[in-house]
Image (cartoon, rainbow, N blue to C red; front, side, top):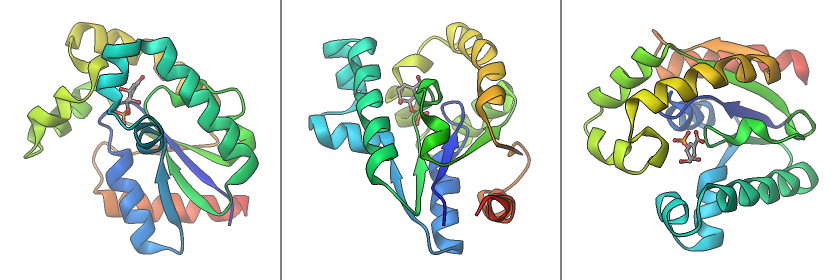
Length: 171
Ligand code: S3P
């Protein structure tokens, strides 16, 4: 099994889809934000507030180097900015979860923990800025992706099934 790397904008459903892939396959999952939080023993939000974004990006780089060297047969979900790492394709098959910005916002707002979801993401605090970030990143996500999955009108279960089917070709 090759590593699968899920990339995509904040709130698109990387975590939910990762959990579904785990249910439907032999894959064990890890999440780059979770690794960083445990390395630092503080939340991503606290790291942004206390150290700034550059510090967080340096941690993402360190994690990407570790993934490349040491992680095999794993489903890796990433923070929305992790796609910038230069060695992404060396780590595994890159799967971009695609959805229009409006649908992402709708998905977050419909979640029972919507407030918490917004609060923990510093880059979503200003929606106009977040929209701009989305517009800037979209072509970058598309460029780096091996596989593009349109998740906007699918359940996590359906998206997971589609990903597992498409990734087989890369084994
Ligand atoms: C970020 C996305 C976040 C987290 C950090 C920065 C980004 O992860 O890594 O707040 O640059 O898009 P999620 O995509 O899981 O929200």
